[in-house]
Length: 423
Image 1 (cartoon, rainbow, N blue to C red):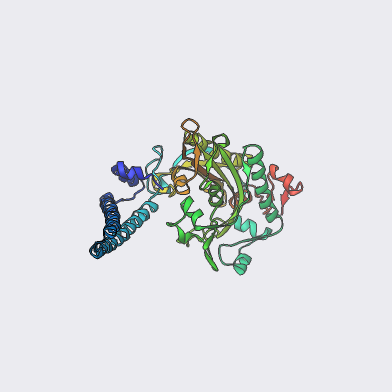
Image 2 (image 1 turned 120 degrees about the vertical axis):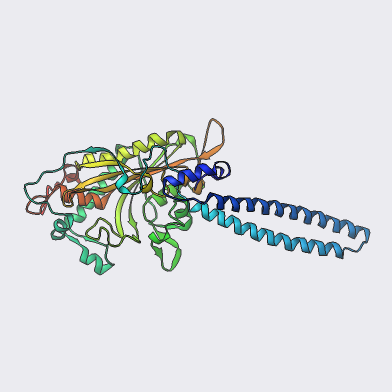
């Protein structure tokens, strides 16, 4: 959530910044509501004071033996007016809160202008694209003979689910284990295990609710719970309503979890294969830092995700998302896109974002600044380190042989009993 002080003191700036996201914010309408709220609040306070004064007068009149009925009638009338004013105040405040919850984060000044992914800015590329003396297949054609079944996924659940069996299932487990070992042993993250369901407060805290409820799966017999769309939600909520000791900062968590997304509105895109699934595995990186560390932490976290691609020798590019493609809660996002020979294109495998204090304000996640002794909002960051399913896809396509067999990357063989070839 944005800082309310921005709306009180720099409303025009908010309007200008939201324009960068192609959002026409009705500043005049917001100001009308806010002024009305102020007027009603003043009226409410005046009515409360007047009622208190009249109530005291009743006591004094009773002590003197005077007729208090006129005063009782006045207090009753004031009480009715107060209820009306309080009801209106609550309604207006609810409208203002709804507006605030529906507005995205202010973009970092380094985010380029643009309306869609076509306007994203390429920062760098790493690795040489593999050369084949045959026509490379995509992961579906490669995977189905090896134990990747979308037919079984649809039978057991529905479309956009997959069943992996045999060495493909082992390969995905090996990928996840490599990521966890690397991030804990080399990058200094604390491994974390979390619930795979979250309540509404948790999803509201990280920005999925209320705006993106249609993208979530709810629990039928308890609609106050949702399946997590990413481990970002439960892990970041570890610091909800917490004041973190400065000596503990930065907090760095790594978490493997399944992720569940309804992909509302995504039908017709990426319907083939494992690119866009209702359920997928991901290793998530989360950092909780001080504002001064925020920008550097974003670069560091992104480099940690990049390192996984380098270890696996998967060619990729790094892009800075433009204003129109940056996520709701993010102030700045780098996407890492891995090369997929079967599609002859780069596809997203990690999204690394800095949210500054946007999530922290919703979460009331704070740290105690030793210089002032006062609690201040932390900055939150996260990124995929990496999406396991898409890493599996990338390995299948980049390490394929003409006969459809798959070479196991060197770093994964220790997790697969020394296996060198999946066939």
